[in-house]
Amino acid sequence: MGFYEDYVYELPKYDLPRDGAMANPVAIYKGTDSLPGSTVQMGFGVVTKEMTEGFPHFHHSKEEYYMFSGQDICQFFDFDAEIEMWMGWDPDEMEKFTITKPMLVRIPAGMWHGPVHYKRVGKPVAFSAAYLDGEMGKVTRVIKDDDTVEYPFYSTHLNKCRLNPSTECTWCGNCVEKYLDDPASAPDPALAKAFKWAQELVETGGAPYTGKYDEYYYEYPVEWHSFGEMYANPRGKFKGITQMPGSRFFGGFSVALKPNPMEVPHIHHANDEYLWFIGSNLADVFDYDGEVELYLGWDPDKMEKLVLTKPCVVRVPAGMWHCPILFKRVDKPIAFFPMYPDGDWSKIVRRKRADGSDEYLFEAASLRKCVYNTEKICVYCGKCYRDKELKHRGGIFTYKKK
Image 1 (cartoon, one colour):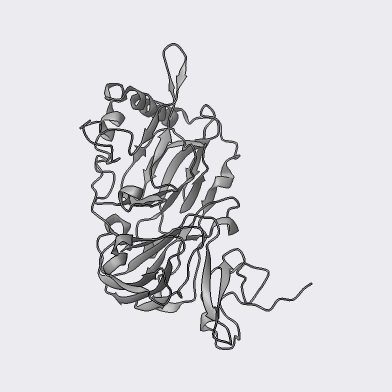
Image 2 (cartoon, rainbow, N blue to C red):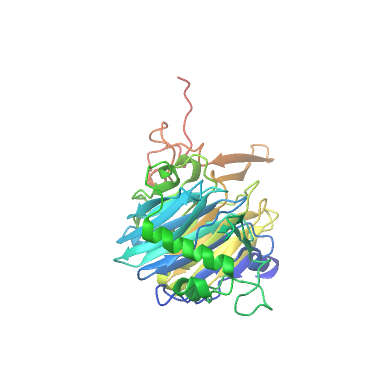
């Protein structure tokens, strides 16, 4: 793949020991540990039976997003589970929210959250956490015997492995079973208290529910597209600020079922983008059989073709030209997840003027209108691309001042 292979991360197989409650192996992108310069961490896993995950904490400067759906992205909305999650600005007043449908949860910087309690798992649940920084950092709380309070900070590069202190913590989860089964005997007293706190929340329910945090929970709408048999229908997508004001995340699944081209060359002027190519069954993302061509380059006239044949993440730095994406061979469904760490997916495309010179046009999801109804935001449904009667397509419309 030449020079640009440094921007491609072939996903390794990770096993997470959760007493059989999670399907293994899982796919995890560990930010700067995976590709230097990365500004996100993200992973996909599937919960197969009842369990409690995590402990109360907050992130001091970055947002995080949780996503819950059916395990097979071809059937994103095939969901049968009851999940309890605690959130709140005050750690003593965290409220429990119950999730029973595919949903995205926005966790602003400074907001306490956790644990996540999978109370009932009728069907396996796909879970993903997207953290908007290349290095994970979290803060929990410890109330000491003399009633003083400390806030232990945990970081991927500052903390050592609990089982082998000579190495860095990689959040592999091998020590978690001990914390959950017997928090008092855990080797880290602060984490032992944090997991005991999590147990107490599950048992007591936390503060009474008022609904004041409902704005951070977004139920995915059942979204049908008009691209025909090229992609699975319906699909699950989250379109940032057009669906949740203030969000800093834009991303969603398209599952390629047949060979097809996607997108035109463009750049993002201020943000990286992360392109996931994995198997559509998130219980086994490594069940992958396809070939994808992607073009990358700092010069739009000298882009290099990358051929992707294994589950991977491609980091596209701000200012790097990329696309088209060509799904050349799709012997098994390919789940494509473009993750953009900003609330408004925007791009800059190049176009030739009549005199042969270049001009650059800015497009953004919040500016793009439906050509059939300009009062509505375009949802990239694809209908206009198949409409031969239309003069303008793809969010282009005639402006009429009212």
